Image (cartoon, rainbow, N blue to C red; front, side, top):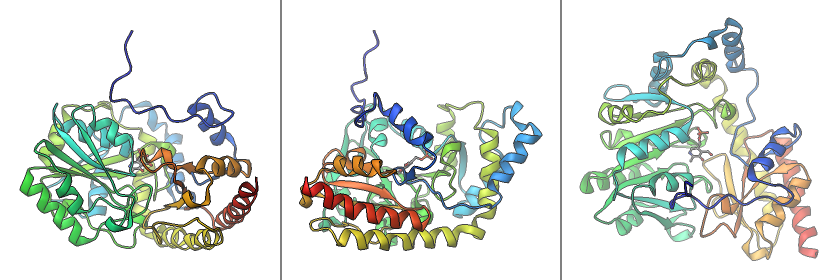
Length: 384
Ligand SMILES: Cc1ncc(COP(=O)(O)O)c(C=O)c1O
């Protein structure tokens, strides 16, 4: 029998009444009325040409051929231009930021190489990296460090085998992001210690300001790009990675999707980047202003608070520790109201018992409904 890998992450907890996490996700996915605040996806796109581009590709029957294995050059160029990473960089189209993270960590790390990440964070990355060496997940859930892995914390936690630092910016789940000065300092650290950086910018376009690490450490950074969030294309599973030609050449030796990424998704992605500046401001400003309804609701509940406000992403954390209620009690209550949210354990081993993570790039009337249900639910559950 093939055994479970020692580095495998503990299975996701199974929500009450379901046989497996997959059954749960299938249930919420198929409920057309479910309000989607549990996956940081974006539900604010209207008719802006993305769907039309994909329909046109399907009607032409484009999908009976394999696409170019590394992605359509047009899409690669558009992504690199979007970031201003054209000269001295190369890119690959992948089936999502997740595949990019897997490829980047596999290509940078050798057995015995250690990685620095943070807790809370996007835990699947720890899984990918712990196949090679130790993953040090620095606790950052506190005001002193500003709820992020600061350059100072990175310096304190490095060891002689650290080869990789993971920066999720803005950070899932807290919504903190890095200043230009911090980015420059990370670039210095990478140079001083011969370390590589994975800069996961999945939530970049929701931030009020954002600095690319690749501009300051071009030879040592892999930038992870996703179409699941700002572009609203999570179900299409498409993303990219951008890095120096050397780094991309090394990834070419371990490609998974050697026959290319979904053609229809790539056609949608081309339309999405091309139309970005027609819809970006609207989506960004609705997402940012939705936060205030959540803040007003949280302020009404004794003991509940938002560690990071405003958030630079399309999600935030509501800390419930001092209310005496467990995140799962509230997420079960909200599910009965038709709202899907995530308990903290999904993004933290150390602090998951404290918080609920909610995302809000959804229509404002749903956020207002969430705010009502949150206050009523906290009241009802505290009385029990
Ligand atoms: C930080 C981070 N990176 C990557 C991903 C996954 O992106 P994709 O859907 O493109 O695989 C997520 C999804 O939530 C995320 O939070």
